[in-house]
Length: 103
Image (tube, rainbow, N blue to C red; front, side, top):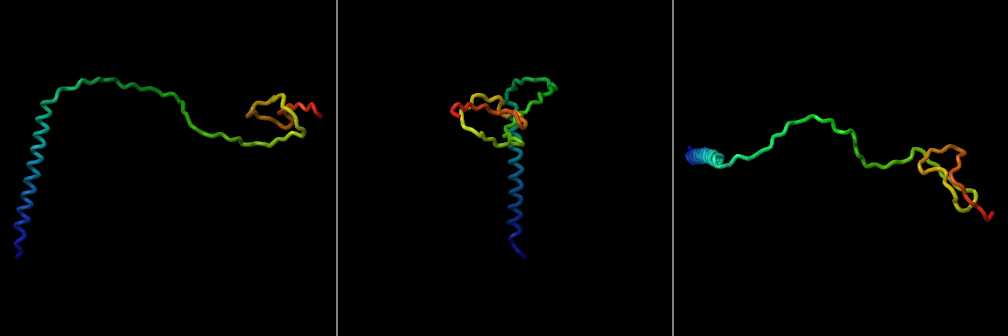
């Protein structure tokens, strides 16, 4: 027979007693400090139901669904831009008026 079992038994009982005494002293410490604490002043509010505004800010990039390249048949100075940037235009609309005095 092995003689190691008494050592395991003593170690197990010692560990169990150590755990029980440490838990008890921790509970007593909480009881002692709870009696020494002063009550805190708190502010109590009533909850209210509100409807938040439906506004969302999102960072994004916008690209045109359709685009076209344009070129002038003559060179000159631009004197007028009758169409604003980003406006929808149709075929035949005047986009730029060019002054070509040298021609």
